[in-house]
Amino acid sequence: YELLKIPYTGAGPLALGVALHKPRVKELLRARGIRTPEYQVFRIAERISLREGMAFPLIVKPAHEDGSVGISDASIVTTAAELRKRVLHIHHEFDQPALVEQYVEGRELNVAILGHKHPQVLPVSEIDFSGLLPGMHHIVSYEAKWLNGTPAYEGTRGVCPTKLPAGKDAELKRTALECFNLIGCRDYARIDFRLTASGEAYV
Image (cartoon, rainbow, N blue to C red; front, top):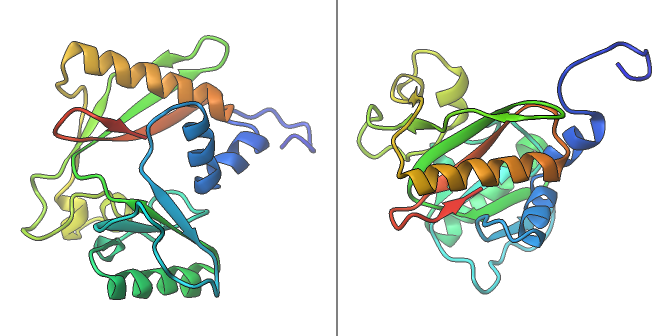
C-alpha cells in the first residue's frame, strides 16, 4: 500500500513485522520490564533440551504466526516426549522455529485499543472457558477462533466488560497502552494477557 501510495488503516510494516516475531516481542517486553512468560526458542535441527528455569507444563507455538495458527489442545505439553513431538510438528508443518513458553494457568483477558495520536483503551474483555469439555485446556486455539461447530469454538465466548478489581483493571489498560506504543502500533490493536489466581498479569 505504501509503495502504491494507497491510504490504509492499521499498523505500518515495521510494527507488523515486529508483532509477527513473537520472540522479538518478548525481548522488547522484558527489556521494558513488562511481565511475559519465560520462554525458549527451538530452531529447526536444533537439539531439543530445556534450559534451566523452564518447567512443565509448557505451551508450544509457531514463532512467526498469528490468529492462533498452529495452536491446539496438543500445544500444552507436560513431558519431554510431548515437547519433542510438538516442537518437531511446528518445524515440519510451518518450517519455522518453535516458541516454547511457560504455560500460565489462569484467566484469558484481552484489551483492545483504537486510535493513533490519541489512542483510546477499550474495556477489558475475557474469554469464558466454562463451556469447554472436561479435560480440554483453557486456551484460545485455532479451532476456538475459526472452526465454527467444534467443541473449542462452541465452548469459548467473549465477555466484555469483564469483572476485575479497579486497580487490576487500570493496570491491564496501562500495560496494554505501553505495549501498543512499544511495538509501534496505530489505529487498532489487541493485547492479550493471562491473569493468575494470585493476580499476576502476563502479556
